[in-house]
Image 1 (tube, rainbow, N blue to C red):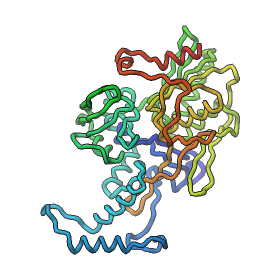
Image 2: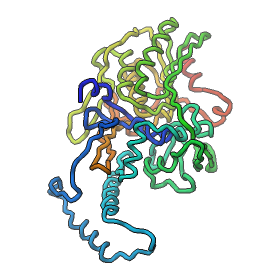
Image 3: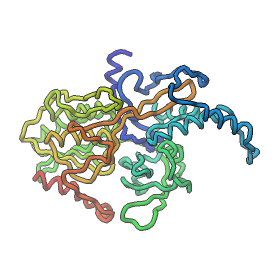
Image 4: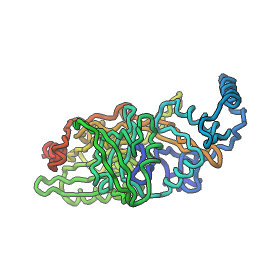
Length: 414
């Protein structure tokens, strides 16, 4: 792989969680380098036979596994005559159970059908309901519905807990299992049962799937208060250049007061977040650290040092429960260096990197390989970062169109 490709696809963060919007997947926290990316024709493959024992750890005894295998083969009597289970199915089931034992919702085994579906989704299938989900406190939770999506129009909100999908209880579902049920063709419908904070009874919501057009950025100048707002919806491959253009608009407006609205932004490309932070930070300043654990050396992502703003800049970053991954990285860095105040509610707390690995021509693993740390060493994954000024929105505020968080940002800048 040449340096151009390595730079272009360097890092992708998910806040991951996964975009059910597009089919359940958008940018999946892939780390840098040939072995850490998924693009058409660039999927790492481990060429290993299922029967190979050359990589078996010396301190692991598989005798118990084979004893259970043989016992099932000898003793099991099928109660459902129409069903069948092959030896390959048993191997896949064993791998799935092993992977689930690490208790990480973003580490998943894909048997053939799921692997094929996942890869096609990454390459760009854009029909779904338009929301991103994650696992929070072991509950399937909406990170954010996308602007203008079927999910948003149907009334889905950040923080909604999805307890049933088409009548199926989601208690033990991984994100990928939920995605499989929720995604579907344009024009078809899916019914969710959700629990919402402040609402006594569960709410049933029917969503008609559609083609999803992902927004990226909006700008607005409040001439009354001379405050410029940049609303960023995602960290896409184009976000860095669009953000640069938005900053040019801000400079041309002659305002020195900036609101960066990251509410409902689930993340995306890490490189975009680093580039955006570089407009406000001197060269070499740490934007985020990648902690690979097990005594491995941390990787530090540093500011490129565009640093075009002086001490006259006054800045507020709006965050909420839908601000995840790259949003948390950008907001965390700028606030820890004293460049901006965070206003809103506690963020989602999705700060990990997943690597997609082909085990053979049919199966694959998506495995968490690192976690993100702020410049001060705070783990984004452990509960999310809290705002400097907490402002909550009630259901009544939303219904009435009252944006108390924006009002507080304007108050602080004014």
